[in-house]
Length: 226
Length: 226
DNA sequence: ACCTGTTCGATAGTGCAACTATCTGCCTAG
DNA sequence: CTAGGCAGATAGTTGCACTATCGAACAGGT
Image (spheres, each protein chain N blue to C red):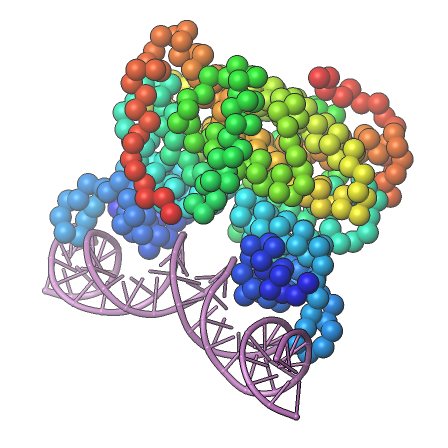
């Protein structure tokens, strides 16, 4: 197909497609002359992925390029996750690296307490330290004990994520699915958390009777047990 | 204190503070003449919150204004969560509202299956529908059955969140803490999930024996980090 | 009272990211 | 054989989040 078909199928303006080609987000098509280049279904697919990562995932064009170029490396199934992880942007202000590093011991203490096997070069360690720093500056101290109970739900989610990835047959597109599961499930989980917060807050309001909103029915629903 | 002190204490340039004042993110100080306005500790606090919400939380200036102005309304403790929730940006492309709505029944089906008490006007319903739409366009279908196991960890996290909020004494700043817990814990949870994924993937690699330790090659593409 | 430096409020400008538009020459399909 | 689409390059636009400048009005020290 030609660029106009690609545009139509993916719902992306031709100008934007050219822009993505220039920026290396989209691999070039097969040129059949000076004015004709052919694109395939994989371009449609890639384009959809780019749009999802940038709009829903909130990634910048540069970060998206990192992810998709990393994806294009041929890899063993379980390495793809690492590649995706390491290509993820970890917004740590360069001016604050030192301040962030002061919180790293807390992160390592947590990881030790959990017995988690995480490489020392993992960018997530510092990312977590940065967030803990922010929180503590705002007066909300999260100690190892406070964080530990959050780890179990996180682990449960991670197991589900990997279950899904393990059952994907399409080896060629495994990296793509890994990126999708890691990145696009994030907003899903965030929203689930908010929905759960809303539900939980209704339940607690029913007991304390303090909310002025909808009269909460004291309907002792089957709350998911711990 | 004067604006220069506020700037020094918060680490924010004077120009930026003026900008926030103009935009209504920061309440005006007490003017004592045409060239002197006094600010208090609450301004320092608010400024730190603004910086955290915009930089770490990734909120736009407009979204941050929505949150903080909503925060300034005097409210019952349990309503604050609702106010924060409803001020959150839910990035749903206006051009796709119809397409998103097609996925709403799936969301409601999930909520019914869970027995969650969520108001019909909750913006989260549509936000979830939008994400599910994205995923299904990318070829990853998440059915109610697939999502159910994710709900329990989400509920566990939500309970921890509300526990924390319940034990906060400072009623005046409860809304502030609610915003922090809802928004700034999000990156923490996202990182915990990734750490758990990394750990889990190591474990599974050990069992299947596929390369997980020798060949990882965490893609050493040195991106110039700012 | 005088001088120096700060502040206020308004307005205009900057830098960056993500597109979007235009242009020229070529080529392809009908 | 020609009308129209396409490639590749370059330049322009839009929106956001600041940042810089300016004149008038003080404030605080001497």
